[in-house]
Image (cartoon, rainbow, N blue to C red; front, side, top):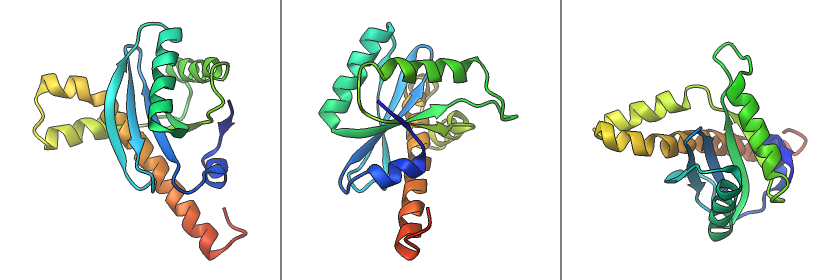
Length: 165
């Protein structure tokens, strides 16, 4: 398994390959999936965290079923740009996953993704109980959508200037 930049991922992906988004929490892993055109991120059911081995097996079974080409995982950087304990835990999770899969991971700054997800769910008038069970996948969807938008911009830049990235 490799950790890539979003620019490296843009070069590596083939047409029709889907990408998954992850919001790693202490109790759940929020999941989102791109369409094959990599235009839209759609929330998927969360994975309830048990222990790493089981979490990894569940995540890899999801990846196999959905034909995931890469994972975009939210990196919970502090608002001041510093890396706290959640960043270290996320990086450790990706390092541990490297022993289990060849699928690449891309770290994506997830600042305010949960806030944006919460606002979207409130605007849809989702009840507090339903918001609690959907927030992690909605955050994963926001993370993934940001990465998909960047991939699209990189693709357009390459079309207009093949030497740009």
